[in-house]
Amino acid sequence: MSQTHRLLAIVAAVLGGAAFLSSFSRSADPSELASEIEAESDHMSALDLATRIMHEDKNLRIFDLRSQAEFEQFHIPTAQPMAIEAITKSVLPRDADIVLYSEGGTHAAQAWVLMRMRGYRRVFVLREGIYEWQSRVMEPRLAIDATAAEKAEFEKASELSRFFGGNPEMGVPRSQVPSGYWTTQQSETPQTHTAPFRRRGC
Image 1 (tube, helix red, strand yellow):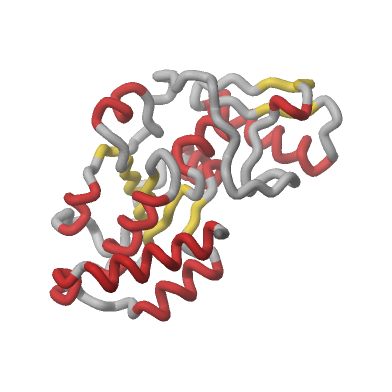
Image 2 (cartoon, rainbow, N blue to C red):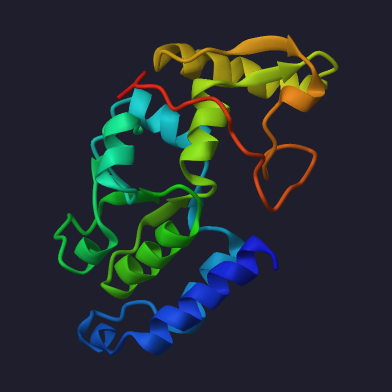
């Protein structure tokens, strides 16, 4: 099952199983949510998020949906911890750009649906969660046989990585470059990231 189909299933489950949503401001109906998911306009990349944090975007609100212990071990700079149960009660500026992330995509996708059903329009999911931040911002790696496009992206990622205290590395074997939707080797399931999460950038 593709990530898009998984997210569509989450939308259906949340809308079908949560009667309390009827009290929300339904500015987005299910078909509108499904269209946004299909078009992937509900996502923000780690590099785009890092750029906005670096530029001190005042309109940005970032929420970490993992456990408190995971948050304290490592989190994205300026992020705030939030349990998914708190999504139904949080009060945020209606024009804020809200970015949600978790270990993977499921909790963030569920929270995205809840926020959209509450009438928040500019809500995004960090597509592969903390793994993408660690892989693309904190520890970007350039393969020894990198293409011109990969070199250009690595140059941008390296600048961001150094800003956040990361560790960009060049000339590594292709097998050591983390894969995900952003690589030419499309993978629905990210490789296991064995390096421990560091406190850099928190």
